[in-house]
Image (cartoon, rainbow, N blue to C red):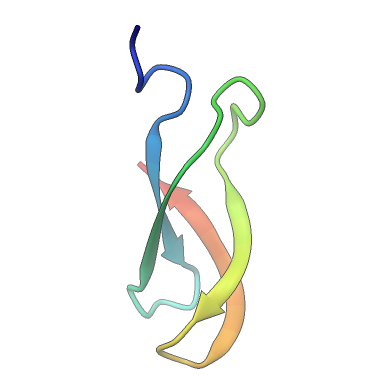
Length: 54
């Protein structure tokens, strides 16, 4: 059983340009496009969009 096929590990990078990243897993069947989540960036101390980088 291949674990990384359906739920790969992705890195979410801040769109604020601070270089801060989160690491998470996503379901490739439900979210085939790049993931965008609004999360907290502690460098600038506010919530910003984090985009999936490849």
